[in-house]
Length: 490
Image (tube, rainbow, N blue to C red; front, side, top):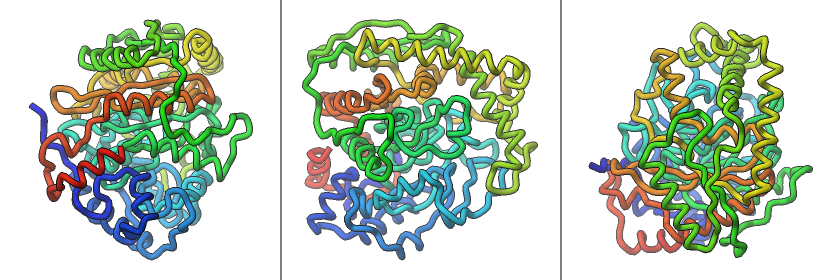
């Protein structure tokens, strides 16, 4: 039976709006920025004891800071994931192995993000260094899924996803090195775009990787918020190698040839509920006039193992260089069992690093060549429904956990290696009342196509609303007038 969700949507200044809806009300003078901020703080205090999604707060600082009024997201409350520096807050990377120092200045991407004028409430939770697909620490409290708190919110941007889904903020920072925006978006019924490599400012850590697989971005509840965010970010830093992204405001008119991909390169089949949701979206796109073409995975089977080695290499680098590179006191022996296991997994074949790096680059080229045959690819985000809490817990036997992760995450990493954009959208709900996401992927630089498709699907099959899935565990009751207004805004 569907579980009663945990959310905070109610008749306060935030109401049921997305970020653009809030901005419109602020500009009309219907609400005040102070009231919006206080509503977000109140909502956070209401649900964070259950969600454990905000790991450090700056409520008083947010109350006292001057908000620039001429910015596109001025006064919109948000959170920043706890793996980039924000002045005045520690950067803990979700790890008990790091006793983090307070940052004395913003990171380079933080400055780009803040240029939009949002009010930052604090930092959001993630699994240790973003290595897991669930936001569960080995020691401490997990971040559950607001739609059903016995299940995972996904990862690694799990805290941001939980806060957006629960209604605390309408938009939140995330980053994606293998699905870390798209996976929690899928689990929590949100919109999550991994942009093209180079679309936004890269962090120093991303630039240091032999293949930069990390993209920054946001999790939202509407396509228009995601489109507006990525358009506005260019005003701070216009990418040199990418064409400017227009402000996409509506569906495209061109009918597309879309590849339908149902099984990943891991060799594990997609579960029936997820397959049914993806096929229903394919049918919808067909009815909208697009051509649907079944395809196989666009790269050879070695991709899964090669990406796993790269994943292990990043854990190995953290373990052996963290004392010099991390902002605080780092104790490698306190890394969780997943991080330790990944580092060992890489070390066993570290001498083969040049070979798997070369193959990964070739995989990326193979993947991009698929877009010579189709305009976009429709696939699952995850091969299974959102995982129950504990299923991917990092303290379990590494071999068992690694197998579970390989069965769970098979569709998202390819876009990271290729540097191409991919968009997670809500596709439907499981019988347990959990969101199931679908992924739309396109060639490098073609976010426009994905956002136009996103608008089209959002209009044709409106995304499920958490406040329409039963009475909230703790929130005041909304009225029908505001609910109707929110639906029109979306």
